[in-house]
Length: 286
Image 1: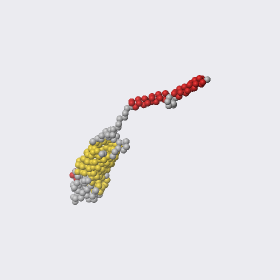
Image 2: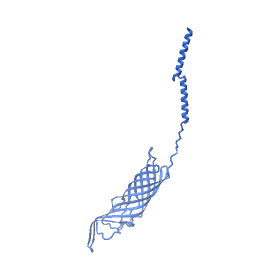
Image 3: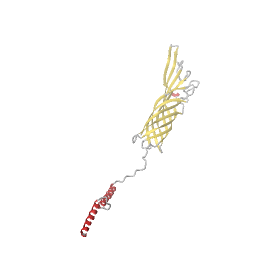
Image 4: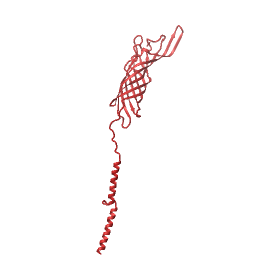
């Protein structure tokens, strides 16, 4: 009887140990050990084959030393600092093309120069008794005279520009510049409008009445030189790798008198004016 009982216990214990060895949850089972070894070897193989990531360079992209831009600026022109008895009558609208070159000074600072074809102008009203020293004979009477000027200069700008960092991940940035334009006159024309004009030639019996429009060249009555201060504020965008765009506001203040001493009547009275301009510029940067 004892022999049979011992045999029974041996069979039961052997079955229990075998069942636990087949369960992966049993911590000491052969299956658990084999799975752990396989998983460890797989991780080592994966780590061995995984390529190492290259360290990102902290060196910034090298900036260009010279930037060239082509700009087009529609401008509103008027005259200021006008002496009496002359008065401002209106404005003129012109378009100014420009080619500029900016040299990178570092720290977002630039020194710029270039070539600008700038046309200034405005309208003045003259008193009825004003007679220009170069005016032709035969102008007997008129109630009012309005003269419109258009004087063009070839200008060389000298300007300093400061620019902010781009905003976030975009390529947009603010900038501002301050400079001086030095110009030489290449063309100067005028248009005169005489209101209630009257011309009478008694000998030939000619009588002309009404409004008269007269055009001509100013010649030496316009100053040869022009110096003006220029302020710009705007935004720039690097749209492509080698091409960018700029746009903003531009203001010019003339330091020199537009008209010379030859623009006077016999008693020495002459119009003294300084040009001012304001407009919106658009440009392409290379």
